[in-house]
Length: 341
Ligand code: KG4
Ligand code: ZN
Image 1 (tube, rainbow, N blue to C red):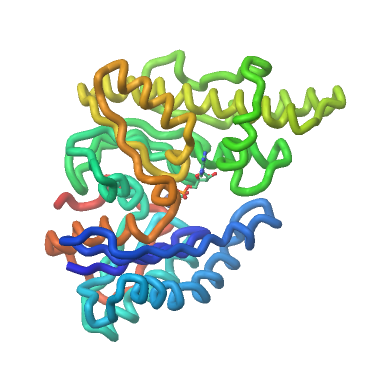
Image 2: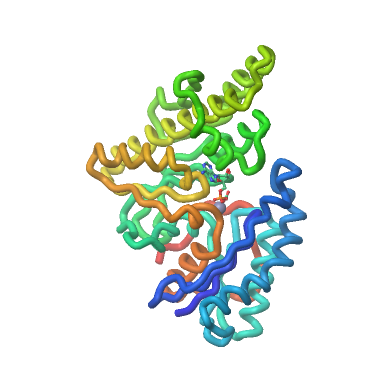
């Protein structure tokens, strides 16, 4: 089955062609980061309008690079939520219109299920069951995964998502949007030990997260440096390192706990923050210490992309899942509501 995947939930237009027999044939992405950077974050209306502009040229581009024609496509998978409603509607309308014109089915895919399954596109995909750490701009969740659509939420953030904490902290210390890659870049030049921030909620049992207090500690440290005339590039690097270490340690402690609680030794990390090298290294070490394995997607498939949507949609379409022509999207959509296949 050849599936065209469309992703438009936020600030990236992603398109890909996935073949159930041959694997990923082509993928293309247009990132709107430059468009939103001047505003310090995503402006929903600008995002929607840009998706409209980019979608059809990107579809032509993936078809050309895969050497395929519209008539070869068996189905279209699109992100139906969670995300920005206007942005989601662009992908949904486009998918339904093309599916109607080409007389093929279209299927709405859950964005976080797409992220969760992205490591399946790699050479050594994880086997079920496993624990997944989903860390994106909107979500921080630990999930027990027994199969596609068999998700048990083990714990999640009570306030900011991990990616959101990176983005907001970066903004507080004067870095560009998106903050995650910026903090990671500056952290490489940070002085270890100059700052030490709390590891929130690690001193009590449970698998919940909270990152807003960490953000405040970081702001306080930065304001003290500013008052002392030490608002330098090096201070930004030192704060970035300490902040990143606090997030990485916190996520690692909670992942270890989730593995102990479930008795599992396979951990999947997915979503934009799973591109973070320090997080990957810390989790590799932790999994090595318990003789387990950690799985993640290549960096460009950790952040938003069309390939993960084409893959997730393909699995559900192969299982016979279909939907009608209604164009409906969901800003909020708990992943546990998805049917098992
Ligand atoms: O999954 P994603 O592309 O979009 C959502 O579904 O939200 O995640 C974007 C988030 C942003 O908050 C961004 O700052 C963060 O992922 N991010 C990173 C890194 N690359 C992206 N955070 C830390 N380190 C990175 N290398
Ligand atoms: Zn995402």
